[in-house]
Length: 347
Image 1: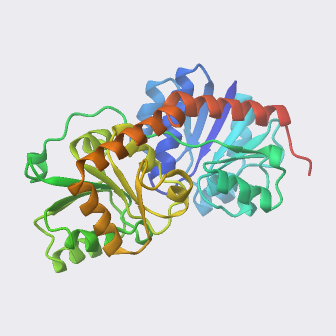
Image 2: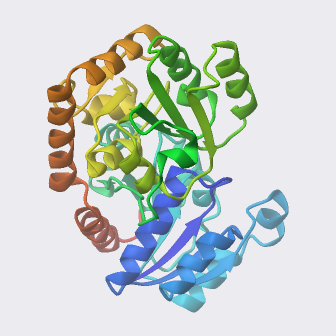
């Protein structure tokens, strides 16, 4: 199988990170691949290390106007069996007259207008898949292909290095610092749990505002803003609780990462968590934008070691049954095979 990937994320977030991890995993399976992507050096090094060739493309208005033939040119040279457009911007640059089918990756409820030239569609949750069908796409051309945890090995994180007492209870938030991620809700909840330390790993446009909020709430001694981190696994292994406080989260790979690390998960009832987390079994769910409810969940996990252990064990069981790297890549390879078998979409 030969796959041409087009990756157009404007920043490195969960979807972009998973795309890189999936491409590396596919390379290990012997899948021949070529990647058209933005010039991100770290990702480029990972592609090179596993023998995947790349072409840099900026996806700016200039590129889209004056280099619009790039995808078609590469496809003619590389002769792929399928072209994979990762997310909406990538879908919008796929030419109509490809010799092979193209698939569009839906990590969210994207507008179908960006995928007019795609022939099949990959969705990360059953609900996103159902929404694509409801908007007029044939059900046989829509595949559910979820993600796995994006956690390469990394050196252990010592709590002292993050100015955190060894005996403290630590809640970890892995997130972009953006309004939809509910960081303010997490900080307000932490103000109601006085013996809790919070690590926030991620960066984004809201960082300054959230740092100011933490100071107003008197949390500067217990909250650590860690910035962008590539050692998610080490952070999870060093924390006690993983929290996903999002207002909006179509899936939430952090759910899988917490389960894989064997850490109790607390999440707000956003779209992804509602579809996957079984409240009280493999995680705790609380209402969106409810700091008091989130604080209550935190206090409950801290006060009930048996509950924390039960959530951790059940979550790890979910991970092993449905979300390991091998299971997810098996599904992705099968979805490619299905899309290739269906071929081009009429019209």
